[in-house]
Amino acid sequence: MTYTDEHIRSVLTTTKVVACVGVSMNPVRPSYYVARYLSLKGFTVFGINPGHAGKMLFGQTIHASLSDIPKGAKIGMVDIFRKPDAVPAIVDEALEQLPELRTIWMQIGVSHDGAAAKAEAAGKVVIQNRCPKIEYQRLFGELRMGGFNTGVISSRL
Image (cartoon, rainbow, N blue to C red; front, side, top):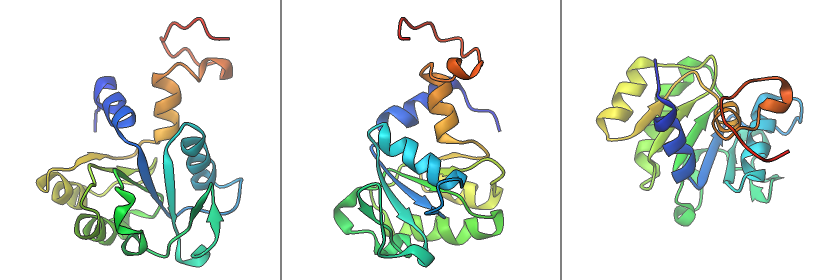
């Protein structure tokens, strides 16, 4: 799957509210630090994990499922940190429960062509096997301090 930088940039700049399915409370887990990073960048992040339901993370209550998110939350993107075999059920629930949903994003190592096709047929943008944190940093010039040449010229230090 190939995505243009413009396509990914558009998703990241138009999304304001993210549901992170499979979020962890453990700060060394990728789902934790991706959700934390997005919240620090101004995204509202709703964590989804039945094992942590009711706990607070980054100013929001963690919910057991997408169905439990308050109706007025206006989730624009679902970021999936689950094994590929869990993706179809997550996509089905997202399509049914989230009327404002625009994007299904599957993390690095996560893809499911059937679920992606269903979401796309419903008019949703689908990005597979990518990380929004990495893409945000790459596209907005934040990876250069780690030794990566992002190709973005910036006067920020």
